[in-house]
Image (cartoon, rainbow, N blue to C red; front, side, top):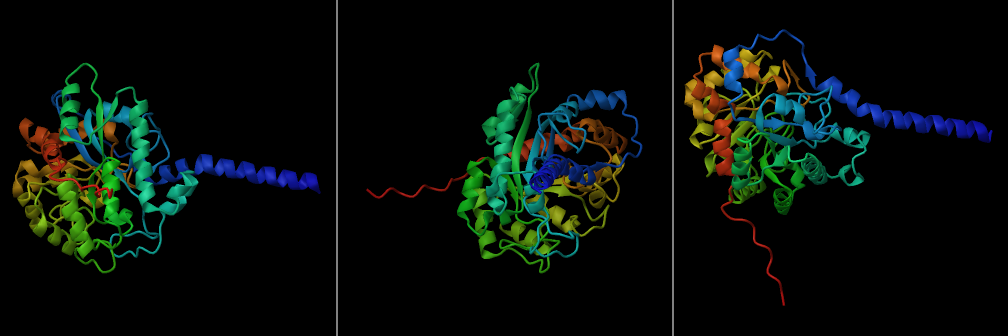
Length: 398
């Protein structure tokens, strides 16, 4: 009897080890996909121009997954070797911490969460199992560790001076890739304004107020009530602008977007999405919203997946970017891939020359391509992450 019990326990232990070793990769393979449809040939002109670009992508969810960003993976859309292949200068890495079960674009409650099971399956630290704040701080730790182990190939950017240094280094023989931290939904604050300061200290320099559900700061485009900013949400936007954290309206309800644009004192961004004019999906921006973002001096990051551009073809990315250019000017156009965000795309980041080719085919000039592929983002990020005033530490009582 005892031998049978030992054998059963051994089988259970082996099954558990297999689950924790294999499940995270299996889950990612099923969610971050490349559709395999044909890609156009990239011309010599496009290759030559692409090699001279300073490329910035405003949104990727790679930190969510259990794999090293330093190693070339056989799954997902992005890692350091593929960023190098794609000539990316700066990648914004989002911390995604909660996603409702049965997630859809129309109406979701915040009562359930898919990511908790992923967190446990990936054997993340126990402190992250029941705390959204700790999940974001863990993502920051993952990036900090990767930077430290990269031998200088990956650089974290947290200041305008750091951004300038990155760009200067990229003019040398070895071009490092920059990374900047963002947050997808400030439900991670867990209702406490002071937690925003913890996140900024950890390196976060951009944040969206909502994700796929309403929270205590604002309504989501995909929530149940879809309301505007709450009093806490207004406090958070003001604190972000003061401290040099860029406000991201991606996933915000129409009322939330309107409230942010009314009170914005600094450029805001829509980090990843599309435009209603070329893809009529509720999360995509109307012309009025595009004009509002442009009025702040901000950016519209165009995504690569079907709900952003109603296709996955590079030409559809260029079509959305062209609409923004024609409506408000080239200076407000940017890339916002949503790589590794449970999306299906046509190409991974190693093949970003596909976008350069598509922009050439759409009639963009070389200077317009330089601006759209990263020049605009460098301008807005460099100015937006410079703090006006930082929170003061409490005075010591002697």
